[in-house]
Length: 344
Ligand SMILES: *Cc1c(COP(=O)(O)O)cnc(C)c1O
Figure 1 (spheres, rainbow, N blue to C red):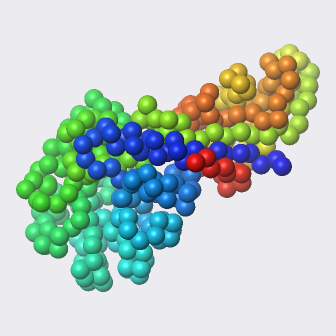
Figure 2: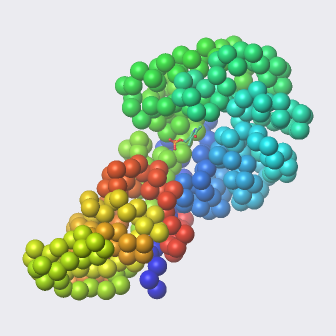
């Protein structure tokens, strides 16, 4: 078998959820949009529910339907995209709670599903989703009369604790929600770490559950072990891979491993990346191909059956750093070809 093994530790995910929960006095939801950040909503959702999570967030209604199928009735499922045209049947049949982002969505919702639960998303400065202050003032009384379940907003700079934007958004959020008897939520993973002022009634961690920054104390969740298909010795002057991108200057032992950019190991990580074997770092050489990567294993006395890209010795964020991106993108790019093994 030449497929790489992606090991996903569900216990680590639930431990991270509990650890984030213990940082606050309020309730803790779980954000499991984008197929639980690429790790599989059908496994991650029920594991979190068994650990005590009762509130979940997804990005779009279709994801909510898949999550409801995995969870069964009971837990609340909120949808960040709100109520889009064509969503009414899914919202009703999967018992979803759309986070209403605009007056248009509010009208769509109360007209198509009168009396059905909804939440409200406010824009406190990020200018991405949610009602702006003027729009909110205009419909606030009408919306509040329909008793929203929850009011949320999202922080643009929560991973930079000293950024002035955090306090500015906090003040805007307080101004826009003052005096309403409706549960409020502002903090995702980064917001939880900003401290109690940002916690309100409910937090919404995503990436921290999956072991990613900015939750530095997270338990690692995934490891990725890639089979070695072939090993060869390359003489000085010979080149390796597309465009002859690597040229050997000394005798070099090259292992070709069975994963590439089609598996989410994005091509731009090539020049800086390492794999590991028992903690020893082994540089990627040449270009990352669609299904293959070449690695300098000259430092090893014996070449093992697998080399590790992500795990104990290199985190998701380390690998993200190779490619100049963030852990979120590495997680959500993890490919469909991996043999996924879930640890419980
Ligand atoms: C993705 C998202 C979250 C979770 O953010 P993390 O940084 O992954 O914890 C929370 N709220 C909203 C609105 C989001 O889009």
